[in-house]
Image (cartoon, rainbow, N blue to C red):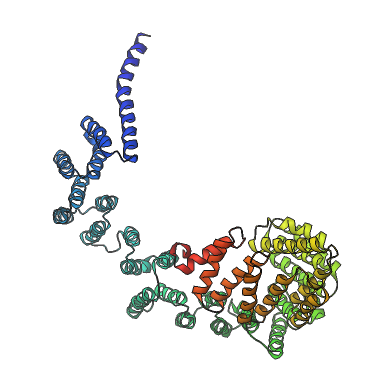
Length: 602
């Protein structure tokens, strides 16, 4: 017990000063936050006198903050005398000189450090880190570059320099550093492309990269990473043919299986560069049937031709040629697990463009009966089969298929899509109350598009039932909606025009305008679609479709009419005038991208 009594006073003898210092340090920080710099300085000075080593940095920072540079210089020189050769204090003294505006003295000090840099990788990295922590990226870079010379290794410190150039937004230096680094480290190509895309601001930057790459390819034509990066550069500038040319040249030079071309073609299709993609897929197919990408390329070639034809204005003859191409492909490869996707594409072409409903239904029935099809593809085929069954006046078969997909894929996007289609089926057939109950479930769907569609259709039904419990006008409108879905736009327009004649004063004016606008969009008649959408915005600004019309205008102006400035005003209108719209987050992102906010692009 006597030993315990001895320990306790000793413990408190050490703990009490430490606790007091902690409290004083916290008080000094509070003074600093409150802008009471002198009070903070008094405390830091007291603490520094008690323990130079521990409180030097806080005291130094406090002195600099109230411009007491002479005292800051004095205590730093004292630390240098106490710890000769410790670079940390030399860097701090240079920082004091810089704060004083005496850049010449700072540079002399820093250059002396560089001149006497030790041939030790860790010490070089440590010294550069000290400069960076003192917000002096330029000298951190000089340290690393000198370190490379001393150690005779230009591959050292690449990651550190890359981060410093990015911090400084030095696009030229960052580009050169990556081009030096990537040949030995090609796995970092995607990282390089992502980082450069966040810094590059336009054509001038990408042209700088292109020039640098072409020089290096000329010196080392076998360096694949440079060719891949040049291809990426052309994609960023939407020079799709040149991007493909690079990929083709590389494939021919290596005499490979054209995997790089096949992958690039997917990107080209997603950018709607259909002609370039078709040329790429044709090259892959030309490699012969033994090529591992032959079947996939042949299928994607026809799918791309399909997208090209149906995305523009097409003739019946164009559609029949496409149908023949799909049939020939299926005859060549058979109707099996590998060609189900092509069967689905052909069925959609037959049903919604050629209106060959029986042939389309028969084809999809055989597709869903094929064993071992990927679950998501099988579900998608079943939804399409249900759609075609509905158009074939088989609503019970359709609802059964929708329900199968929904139950087999709970809480997934495709399961929610099936539930939405089932609700629309009820709407098309006039069972509005049941449709509304299903739609209300989907308002909380994880997919924004599904949630938005469900909300709009639910409100359409509710608003019209509130005005007319018999929903006579709504039943005709739903019939027109079904005709639009079936691709029978001429009949749909006649049905829409009949509503006002049969039911004058009905509440569907804005709905009819929106339906007609969607038909025009389907027909690629964007200027006239814009006229109708603007009419909704002007005359029905508080209607159900107002925010949809505004968003659609923004989308059309940006993606179809190439008018970014007008598009930006419509996306901004969603933010300012319709803050509760489900389009808000998407509109905000697109607005910021059009405004040039690089962080959104990244």
